[in-house]
Image 1 (tube, rainbow, N blue to C red):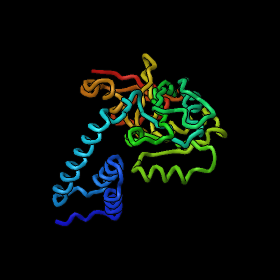
Image 2: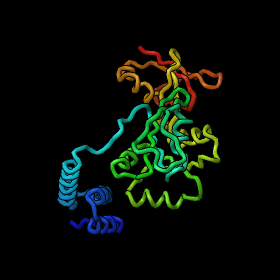
Image 3: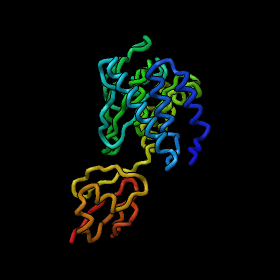
Length: 262
């Protein structure tokens, strides 16, 4: 059975063949694996690519004597802040989270990922600032994040998009003009772009982040699996109204939920 890989796969393959460093080869291989169709005829090729990738990563770790840098995800979502030097990344991190990264007029002040936590409607969202050196070890964080905020000081949209493309980063992103835009407005756009809703337990007013379109079933399952098995009904408190609902009732942002068991 033919593999039938898309044209983008062969472009990634060309990048792999022309790559000068192991880091660039790893990036290209990861892209090749992502783009390779998954069916019976491609199983052997997938196995070969993954084996080659594992070998390269092992060689890279041995050479550096350190593991790839990663930031453990905390809160309900992880958001990366990326931008060219002096684009306001550290300032935005400090404004949104209260973190205290080094802020200076000199370029490349940030040399390692800086982390802070947003409290939005009671929901915790982790922010990670990626240094403008764009070290491949740091960019790996952006590939697994839930969202990227690209900070701009001028009209740099195309350059930033090219940076993401050249490094095979396919994470959803938004732009932020940090020197023109209100930080609270950026925070609101981050929340909207994550596609989450904040739902609260009626008894303790504890916030829970759920995907938009989630149901009472999803809410109950997040608390305990037995809540679904023993479920009778739920009371939904919304904009001054009380609705009695079943497991398939769709929740909205700001709802407070009271579960009743058998």
